[in-house]
Image (cartoon, rainbow, N blue to C red; front, top):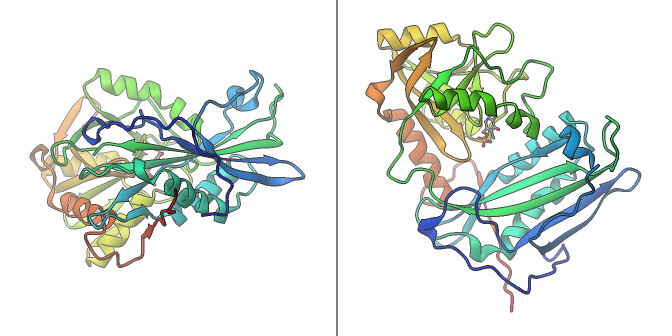
Length: 360
Ligand SMILES: *Cc1c(COP(=O)(O)O)cnc(C)c1O
């Protein structure tokens, strides 16, 4: 803090009541910006009033989608302190996404410091109600004004903040997901391990198909064999068969989820068996039929863990744990949420307290 110039808004917005918060609809009073130009590097980090960006219609990101983002949260703890969850890991992943999308390397320490600085300035926007949080959305877009297809020579980094409601209004609730044999998300050598805009644009059709068939989300299978589990559109996937938790390996097609890594660590801490390996949809469906599929859940910043109550594939549905939240799923959720709000011991140092500047 103090290291970035701040221009404060002269017209602060009215903050919504905590119980009206949804996801990403309300933005805070300020944003963080920084520019890049080839030959000059990243320059001019600054905090300014939140507002529209002005872009030439020929700006390359609008045509070819050279854009990356990340998503993390700040929580107001029971002790009143504001904590970021694993901000270093998010900043590093953001850098990885940048490289995968042919963007220049990021000054990871400045990105990391931008989280603290902006949350500090807009600290009053971190909601108080249980389950709520402040979502941070760091983004980089290609800003060359040109219609040729090549990596941009200039970029804009922006960080915006949104107070968000609890993902679960009435306790953790299982979802219905559809393993798709019609849509694929990524193949090796593609963009699957980057958090890049294009991955989400191309996921919308599958999402609509799943919704039309009565499911909440798509479970993607690998793009080559259409056989092995990859991940859900915005979550990594885990299954518990007997006493083994299995999750697809980081092999170039799925995102290296921060929640995924945290869950794997907790399972190891608890002495449980967790395997990062390929698992086929046929194996999961068979386990669903014979009752050895005990639990299945997605992991991601938005929901933490999201239990799967029903898994559909090729016209067949299997009900998991009678459609209820499993015991391990709930334990993982409670453990991570406890760390978010500073209720339980943060043994791995995952949270980082934000220093709120005293301002007049
Ligand atoms: C963001 C995201 C996840 C979850 O990652 P977290 O770091 O746990 O939030 C998983 N899969 C995809 C495709 C994502 O975009």
